[in-house]
Image (cartoon, rainbow, N blue to C red; front, side, top):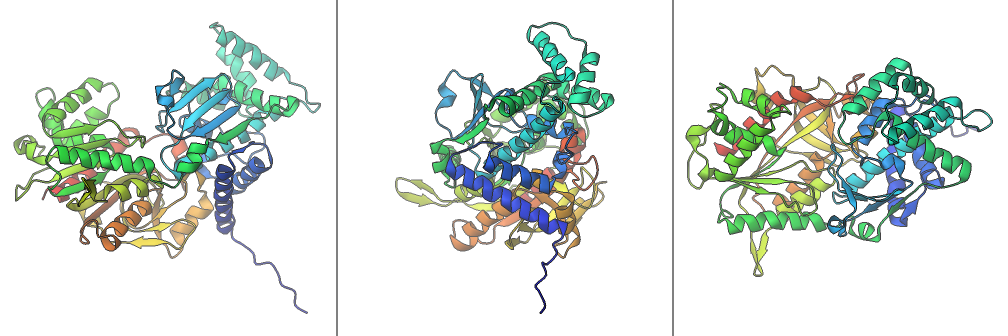
Amino acid sequence: MIQNQPIPRSQAQISRAAIQRLFVSMRHLILRGAYKPLGVSGESMIQAMLSLQPEIYGLIADEEKVELDGLLYVFQRLPKGIEECRYIKLISREGYEHSNFEKHVPPSRRRNCYRVDEEQYFIEMTRGGSDIYDILTHLTFMYIEAEKIRRNSMDVKGRKNRSWLMLEKLVEDLDKGLEIEKEVGFTYLNTILGRTYDQVEAAYKKFEKAQEVNDLFKITYWLGRLSMDEYISQIDREITFSPALRESLGHHIYGERWANHIKQTLWENNIFDRPIHIISSNLHSVMNCFYAKAALGKHLKYESLEEYAEALSVRENGELREKVVAYALKNGMIELSNTKGTNIGVHIFDTEKIDANKLPKELKIKQVGKMPVIIVMDYAFGEQAYETMDELLKPFVLDEERHRMNVVSVNIMGKAGILHGNKGDIMIPTAHVFEGTADNYPFDNALSVENFEGCGLGVYAGTMISVLGTSLQNKDILNYFAKSSWKAIGLEMEGAHYQKAIQAASKIRKNINEDVVLRYAYYASDNPLETGGTLASGSLGMDGVKPTYLITLEILKGCLQ
């Protein structure tokens, strides 16, 4: 009798299953309302993360070595001081913005966070399910590393070792404002973090340079201390979800308010019935393309737009950026600073008010018929892309009458992980495929490789994978996407969500013209298949200026001509 043998699974299949388990667990916990990170539910998430071993979290599966670059990446996306709090509550927009609680906004992920007391943080979630999954993933990683710190700080009998006791004394001195001997402190961290002296010193400097992040001494101490309190004294850490957040999840509450604010502004400025082009990108690149030369031409005698862009990208040149914004607001740009809870800023450009003679040489306005209006929305986050685009493309209802916008094109410029090239290269998608499903969205892209010939960067065309979370990808999954018949060129989080909303609006609901022009292009913010090339290794910096403006110019040329 032949017995059924288990079918062997590839590592990519195991990893994809781990991602699915994580997301099912997270949705269950959100509906339940609370969980303990080291309880049964939290432990299942930890095991899934350890099985997955995402590239961005480096040494997560090492039982002794603490992943330092991953910690920095996470703490730049979590509020300052979160390592000191046992209780974390994820909330909706519930009025805390009017309170006197200490407010923090992480530098690399814009969310309002409120320090309620010494032990509790409230974190506002208004950007949809992807935002919640993202933060729960980061918190799970943080608790995994905290357990390593605890184990490295205790002997076999469960007593605190000398390195930990000395770190406690050092942090006490820091809290008193006293000078400390950092090099001696690095030797304590050397043991507690399971890393070499050189690695600890290099990590300390990175944390020191980072904005809105505590230093490595304090972070290590508080992560270890709360872990010890739970291990020794049974004082549990806990994550909860407010009833308002659980009720709002999946509904377009913030996206609807945001979109109506945009349409109301168009109506009030008598530009609603003009040809409209929607661009999803960073806010500054379109504004700088239109106005940098006109606003700064007297101060900076540059020949090309790229030179202006590089000057405006230098952190110290805030005064120059202010000049461009001030000029833009007087010459056709409307800035919507109230994001209605979405954290997605908006610029509206009335091209009729832009002086064509003051544009850079790379850009021309062809004046035929009604001049177009360009709506630029800042980057959405994962599922939020569907919510915002779906609501924006709906008709504007005024006095019970429905008014359709004349949307001529939708243009998406994004950052993405590349699978075949290098940081800074350009990707032109021909289709978006949802990770973990067979859902796919092929489309006609008005941009092509030919648009960027001779630009000096690598340019790739093909399928893009819209992933459930960039921080959850590992090499096995990414190699599968790149080398299987999908032939993926990169991964991002928003493309399929945008395309789902656009197709529904144009082909099913008939809210916009069926022949709406689509332009998609991404520049590579990281190469997750390359050692040291993940997002945790740092930002693109000035290397991102060239691809950003090349893509922006091609999009604007299509919109204006």
